[in-house]
Image (cartoon, rainbow, N blue to C red; front, side, top):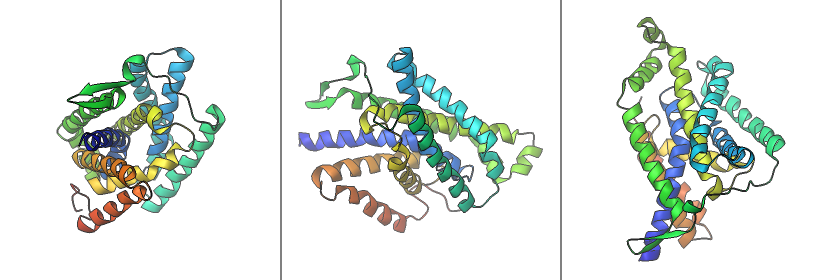
Length: 287
């Protein structure tokens, strides 16, 4: 019984990581109708920013996290202003080709800047080792991930789905011209939304670097996972993305633990079954 609970705990921690990385894609794809496959690249660069801050400048682990959010958020604004804003009214295929091209460009940039090998992550002593919780021996860092992920989920649900900012974003998406005529600065709102999504992706990459490994191929390994989470959860819904992320994390960890020979296949079967049952996602709205 304890082994099952431990595997379940590991799956929840993994699911929160996937949620943080994918929630920005859910926002930009569901609220802004923009297919940003480069989201996984922002996660990768978030990991590299954390590694550089800690190893080259001696920044403590906790202090590096807000730095990652700010730096990758600023990078997202630059990319949105220079590239993405010119493609808002294009078709989905054009956006897919554009952003997948940016993914391969980001891989080349990361390889040139940091090399093609895995990065070594030095974690603080208080986040290493294991702790006994309710009779279970759990990894300290995974406990930390669950706490951070739960806090981020609460902040995002309250901040984007139940605030004036979220209402303004949806207004700009529904009818950008009318929203602008009502006095909303649509370009600023879109840029801010991209900054939040990119910053969260970078934060997820920074938190996952020592668990999932960090190398230039990171975007290719986890892009499919992010797309699955957004599709299953329902585009534009924070709660749906959280549920899908946790479900995918648990299914993936349990599948690989109990069925190592074909455990990776489990999540794809569940994804197909879910999409047949709910084509618009678990909490997605038909448009």
